[in-house]
Length: 599
Image (cartoon, rainbow, N blue to C red; front, side, top):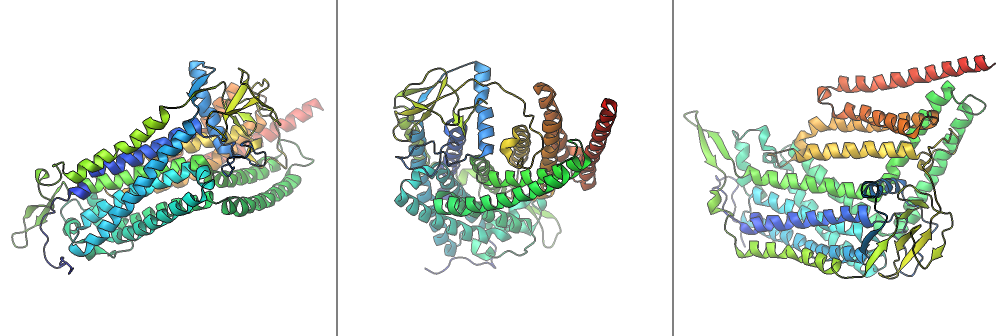
């Protein structure tokens, strides 16, 4: 069929295409992705057990001693799951024994549907390109396919162990996902010249506004490689490709364990050697309050801990949850920003009189997408499929009682210590922790838990302290700071209005993000000092100082007086460096005075 577009002729206002921009279609794609992300969040905070090996077989002992859970997941879940117990004082929580299988079946139903609809809408869009499909409708198709891709990536996060035990399903799902990723990446590459997506920059008084009604084939290549539209396109491609590559690695034991973990283990040995060498030079045969220990060894230890935090964080479940939330918000802003652009009126200068004349880029709303046609109704009804699946699998099964918080790497998620070699028993009492067995939905493993009381970490600096397990207070402070910064970024993105390219606000966000990363190093350094030097103080006093430390560095990245002022940001951080140096010197002087007095 010959092409039906002409890039040189003026284009009429956009006509209705309910199969692309209809309310039912938009609601189906967005709501399905939202349900998938919500299920992932609930699964992480309620069901996910970081002590279980994701590459365990169905007939394997779920508590494999060779598997070491991520300290980030362990710390976050221990804190979050301890909150209901503190608030409600409940000792027992009744949940369904088939809850994990229910999550798996729900997510399978949604992923199968979304990967098919994502590929279908992209193929349909490619088929309509030669027929004069507008740039606006092409951008909506790309954003809808984004949600399909996001839903399936969210599913792969939850199905890690399931797909490991069903290799055939893993192969064809990854194959379908690869097809969707390729189609979406190519489709996104066509949008690098869509400057109209950041329409607030030109204010509807420019010819650029009319580019949205031009055929998409007329703008396949970007006019400039330095525009916000181009950078937004690059960022979107990197975001989705990165998510796919990460899941390929995590779904294959050979890559995830044999390659990645062994490489990180070897790197960890080199880091430990560097830490030991520095410790021997700075700390051996010297005072615990020496300047070499405070000004050289601890900043180096902080750098090593932050690097380990990023490595452990990359492979943690918490990072995947945060990535999904960020990707969903990013896609939502893009989609509704583009839909908002079509509702405005453009004012163009008259070629001879020099006056502005109004021009509607689309037909009136009552002529476009208001009618509930067959395609919209079907799309909305299909939204009930995942809801029916959720009701089906969560409404059946035998009630199951968890008598205490779960166990994570020998540590209860409420902070208690489990035995090194837990004893498997057949019944669960008030002093035991039950873990749902992977063998059956009705079986469980119960671990006997001895009593334990919270104590403050008082471990001094040592050559083997470059692991987060030795600095739980510092890890907690770093995680709280990171979560608050993530919340700040997500809220800031959510508040952007009237743009199809959130990267337009990068000029306002990039500096706080950079300062936040630097602030993370400062939080860890000061938290180490609090944990190691002030261990004699009461626990509540240490926590209060940790909170002040977190708020200090958090304010440097979020305070509006410093927005857009790099000098103000860095002066704020330099003051923290000066304070730390003065503290080290003052601490050393007190130690010298104390030694002379005792002498």
